[in-house]
Length: 501
Image (cartoon, rainbow, N blue to C red; front, top):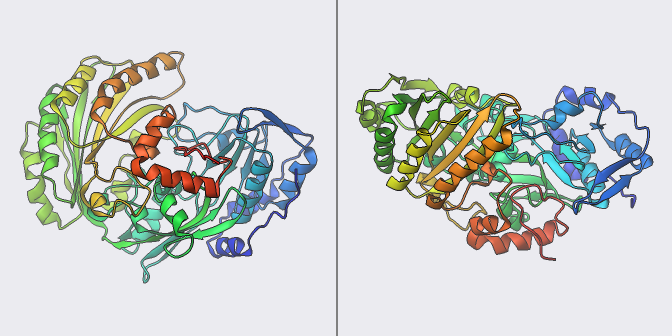
């Protein structure tokens, strides 16, 4: 290994030090792993390389965080993420506490050309935040959040989950449009574009991100905003983790208040076709203040339900009139629409996607809900799986499509809806491969109606061609950025933009 000065930037250290400290840092620094010898690790091109004992000791001595090796206490907990189906074993895990730790880990990964995974919130459906045999750079302990209500700004570190961000911002009646599940990582969501209940009214998460602090593949610290490294700023807003590791984010917050008209109307599965047909027309007439979704849930016994959920960002009294047709439709099993706390709403679906369950999903964008698509879904409902299957439509569009299409790398701003089809089961099963094949077969009938996809919902089996097509006219510009900031493709476990140099 070519010996390097690990700390590349005093500014990076100063910025991180300004964020709130986490009590776990001191414990992590104290829990030093006993390094007894060299280790074998997998490189980015699939070969093996030996990392010498002396190099590992040097790395560990430079960290405020810690190294975890297979067999160490905490190793298994660190390598597991939200999707319990992913079971990979890194050769080493570097648990970082600050930008300096991240820089040290990146320098090692680059010098040894290691297969490199970056974990922030660990919510990657495809398990891209962990790798088999390489290095996992773990940011999950970096959980600082700071809010300035006067400036309407929030600063976060990359391990922050959305629930923590909402908790701090809602104290002041503020929010940034981001997510629908509180245990989602803010970092990954933001880098993929980020949308949530407020997005049809205010736009994407990246439309309200003011800067990123980044450690590049060269181990250099960069700040990316409208005036500093604007090319990188463009690419980080929707281009995923292709260009470096973000060590901190700043969001411009919105004065949205704390109480919103929201809730769901449930219909029996036997009324699925009529409900889907109603929703197809209802969502077409929705104002930007309304975000509506429709979810079909089918159980192995053939039972199930269809839920139409709404969130209205404006005056609840006006919202009542907007959702009146929904509440008057059919003979619902239940209707809990009412004024609710935003914090409660942001956690309301957590129980439906618990951490550690086995998941497989596919997703794509739609310009509308065609009759043929409804027919395809009805065939799925009529053929129950041996596990719980869900098909969800969620509105996007609105203000998302009103921002300049060229201002960020985020693709598909013109989409009207996202469809997500998937299944889940609590524990590993011998039939998992066959069950995933069923879900893929169902997706094959949905796919022709889609146009592009949300990179945060990739499952890892997308082709290079589909990724290129998804980014469309932005792809060549993204390749130029990749050539500049990551020419060896160190950061490849993502919606990967392959360099051409």
